[in-house]
Amino acid sequence: MECDFSLWRQRYRSAAMAIHFTSLSEILDQDYDCVIDVRSPAEFAEDHWPGAVNLPVLDNEERAEVGTIYVQESPFLARKVGAAKVFHNAADHVEQRLSHHPGSWRPLVYCWRGGQRSGSFTWLLQQIGWRADVVEGGYQSYRRLVNDYLYKATLPHRFVALDGYTGTAKTEILKRVASLGGQVLDLEEVAHHRGSLLGDFSTPQPSQKAFESEIAGQLARMNADRAVLVEAESSKIGARIIPPRLWAGMKQAPRINIEAPVAARCQYLVAGYDDILSNSDMLRDRLDGLRAHRSNAVVDGWLQLIADGDKPGLTAALIQQHYDPAYETARRAIGAEVVRTLRADDLGEGELDRLAAEILQELNQL
Image 1 (cartoon, helix red, strand yellow):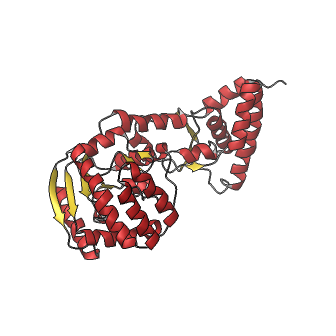
Image 2 (image 1 turned 90 degrees about the horizontal axis):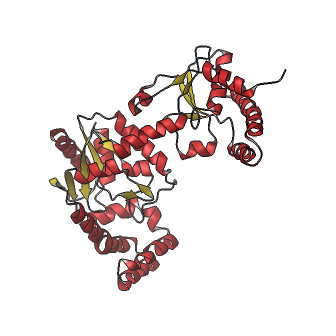
Image 3 (image 1 turned 120 degrees about the vertical axis):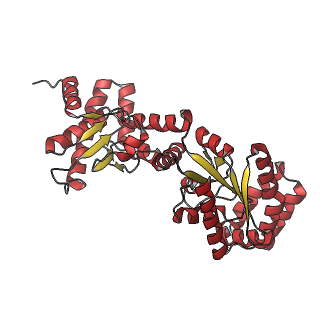
């Protein structure tokens, strides 16, 4: 008997109930036992639903192979080859990774746009007896909601920006405010970058889409009636761009300013950036690239401090000759209101705890 592939596809699509989500809150609040992303590992790595696990039914090479067959030979042959690979991989997932689930297990499945990959995998799970559903529109439907949230709609949150020169421990203060119960969006943590010329993390930055997904997910979970503390940043953190609606809210946000002596800031940065300051080759390359912004004499002075191994001296020079002037320029351009200035004689544990407590009190009054 000849197999009618289109009829079979129609049957498995009708068997799998397509779930439609209209907001990020619905996605974050869904009560399925597991969300399964059946896209390739490369697609998953770029971005995915919050909390999803990757069980690819086509790996990176297989997906490329099927796509090539579709373009160069025929869509029918591509579907036939793809179906064989999809069900082979799906069977492996069932046997190796899913076999421990009871009959009441209720997974939600998605692929790129809610088509053949997620539909076929969901159909197979249903035939076993699991209560599987498929996402209508797949990842693309989720991405549209993230894009609408961060690019089109006005965010409902009231932002307060934590301001201060480089080395005033703003990121550490943010974490302490969060530990005290304040609503905090730590953009540098999300971006895997410390937000400066020498701010690289040991781990690579997420993709722009993954960066936005994490931001949208965190904001959607926050109480819009309470202020959200963010660090005063430029519009980019490393290579990641702050989405426009968030950036607009940050520029308009009232600011709490932290002040500390240069000596205290220098001590804090030398300890916190030791990994960067110890990488002489990288330092020379980065700082030499600033000749378009600082005089040759200034940059040559930095390079000599690197050669001398003088980490405190280099840090103090960068603070006074680069970071502080750049910060002042950015401040004037934004022109945001400073609602309170907090001064610290040092940046030790006790002072950071005090600053965090006072900031939380200020947040609760705004």
